[in-house]
Amino acid sequence: MITVTFISADGESQEVQAVDGRNLLDVAQAAGQPLEGTCEGQMACSTCHVIIDKDWFDRLPRAVEDEEDMLDLASGARRTSRLSCQIILTPELDGLVVHVPAESRNMQGL
Image (tube, rainbow, N blue to C red; front, top):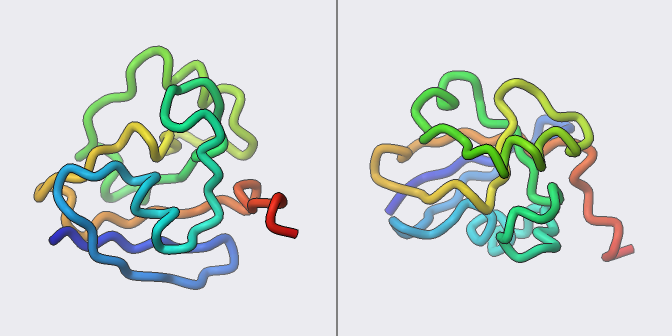
C-alpha cells in the first residue's frame, strides 16, 4: 500500500492508503477530496489540478506537453502544480503529500 496525504486549502490533512498503479485522481475522489476530473483523465480540462508538496515534486515523472498546456489554464497553478489524473502511484511515491487548492472546490455538490 502507498500512503498519500491530502492537505486542504484550510490546512486540514487526510492520510489515505492507495494501491500501487492507481492514479492520484481516483484515490482523491475515493477519499472524498473535491477534485472533479471532468474529462475523466483525458487531459482536456484542469479540474483535477493539485499542488504537489515541493519535497515530492522532483520525484514525479515530468509532465508531458499536453499536461503543461492544461496547467496553464488551471486556476491558482504554481510551479509544483500537476494534474492528478496523470500521476500514477508507485512504491517510490509512498508518503506523497498533495495540496488541494481552494479553487478545486467542487461546486456541483451544493
